[in-house]
Length: 183
Image 1 (cartoon, rainbow, N blue to C red):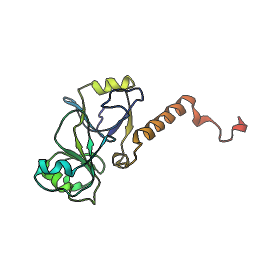
Image 2 (cartoon, helix red, strand yellow):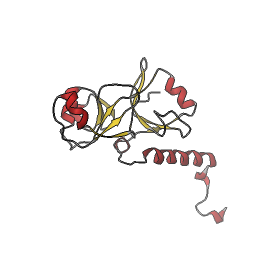
Image 3 (cartoon, rainbow, N blue to C red):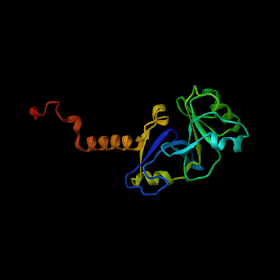
Image 4 (cartoon, helix red, strand yellow):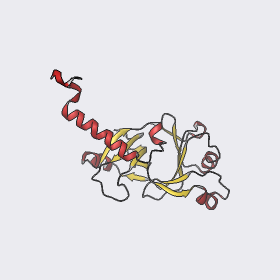
């Protein structure tokens, strides 16, 4: 199975401080190298502009906050909706880039959604499949709206939705009559 474009939702039992209550957007799945993702709901208190000048040697006007993509240190990367800089289209209308010249352009145009990340999350070949089968992660379809969600409780809303789906499947609630007095 290719995990690119999927969401990983941390199980409530996952206690690793790097991933506790996280939602990870999987951006790349390579059979040889494993899977790379970005944590969507670990947002710093620092605006991008605080790190921008030392890295790119130019000013940055955006007030957007920097995201922590995961515990693996990497250069600055971005998820965005600007088709002009489509290094890698992860899902329809959502692109990933780490190309410096593209990042410099993305930050200038706030007509598009973008998130800048420091770090990423990674799994070696077979590791993610093993963790999913152990119940450490739940898998869900990603949408553009979820990737760029401003919801502070993204993890909670997704885990509640998954819980309802699991419960409904276990109880076969699709077979319950609309009117319980008919029962």
